Length: 68
Image (spheres, rainbow, N blue to C red):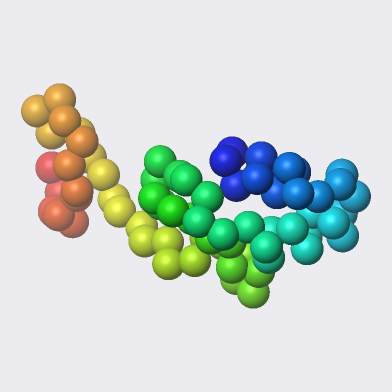
């Protein structure tokens, strides 16, 4: 949501302005990605990593790939 809010602050509501604004937004604070920058070629956050999480003993932990 922070990324979308940052884009709307610097653009108007038309499609082209929003698309162009995504290319200008840099280092938006994000809970998941830290400082996020949008990659217009892949249409994703640059450098995003996937982490598979599971709950063990009431805490989130990274899944080791083994069945539980």
